[in-house]
Amino acid sequence: VPEIKMGLRDQKKRRTRDALTVAALRLVDERGLDKVTVEEITEAAGVSERTFFNYFATKHDALISDLTIEDDDVRGRFLAVPPTVPTLDALLIALAPMLQAIQDERDVWLLRLRVLGDNPTLLIEMQACSAIAEQELTGDIAARLGIAADSGYAQLTAAVAGTAVRVALMRWSAGAGRQPIAELVHEAFASLSAGLNHPFDKEET
Amino acid sequence: VPEIKMGLRDQKKRRTRDALTVAALRLVDERGLDKVTVEEITEAAGVSERTFFNYFATKHDALISDLTIEDDDVRGRFLAVPPTVPTLDALLIALAPMLQAIQDERDVWLLRLRVLGDNPTLLIEMQACSAIAEQELTGDIAARLGIAADSGYAQLTAAVAGTAVRVALMRWSAGAGRQPIAELVHEAFASLSAGLNHPFDKEET
Image (cartoon, rainbow over all chains, first blue to last red; front, side):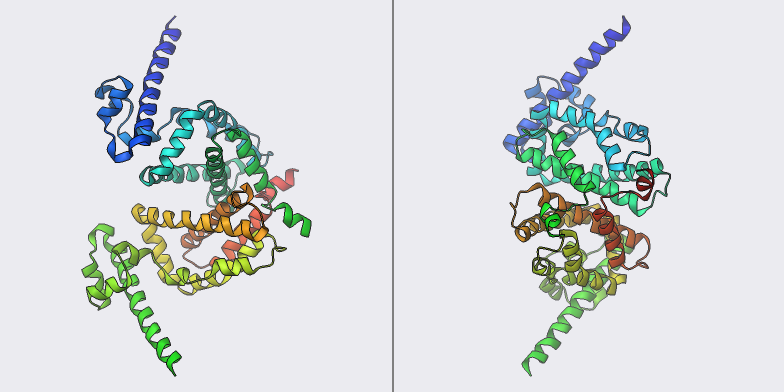
């Protein structure tokens, strides 16, 4: 059956790609970004340099790019949630499968977050991706509510939601991934929905 | 009286410094970051290259650094607000003089924000500063409430407050500074305090 054959071939491609990413992350984690070549990555993964460039344009690409995130349809899921659901709740629904995938690949993600934290150059490239994601989310939030794309509400909510996910990932990484990332993101979003009131604030008012 | 003499000397230093910053921003705005030299900046400001390096370590420094912000004691003011005042309200009180200073230097700030937006390299250097400011604010929020410095509440609130100020500056810049930056920051913080509920969300619930 052709579909199964394609499925197997895709699985093999995915395994090769993942092996290259893991090899790249491990070597950079050990030696530092500037002390690892594509040749060394391909040797560690047991493939040719030509194969590497079938999957990645650059060394950095192999460290940053993740198909679990890139192929994931967060935006589609978000726009599919009825607009009567508050924005932050709709975002949590849309993010859930992606967060589960990150938790399932915990070791690679913890390694990636460590490598990003140690290498500002990579962090900067990630931030460029985040800026694009923030613009897209701003448009989606506005479209979902039928409000102007340059509305302050859409801009602020998109930026703050991205920040909340970033903080949750920092905390997940600091805790070696023991508390599920989905839980940490839910906690952060609950805190946002509650107006960032600290329990002590509530006691006082 | 010695104090007045010092005051005048400091004023002169400040004017020289500001003239260098404005010259640097204008030239980079016109020609692009890589097409402006320190020599051209000092010529435009009418001072020697040696004078430039009395004030700034690098060309980038002259574009990014701003004494109104750097000398401002936001942290001191924040820690002085009684802990019974909710965190976001205390931050607004602490930020007010700085926001007024930005509004007072509107033209330079709008120029700086445009130059930053056009030059990712500079934006990245600013983000490094933001990361440090976020860590400091996390510690201050925790200290003010007497909670652990790695508490999720302090981390999230510091990161989100920084994001809200960034979004307000983006909107201020997009509106050519006509709506006061203090108003835009207040709007953003009010939206955070209200749990990022869109008016439409409220209608539905």
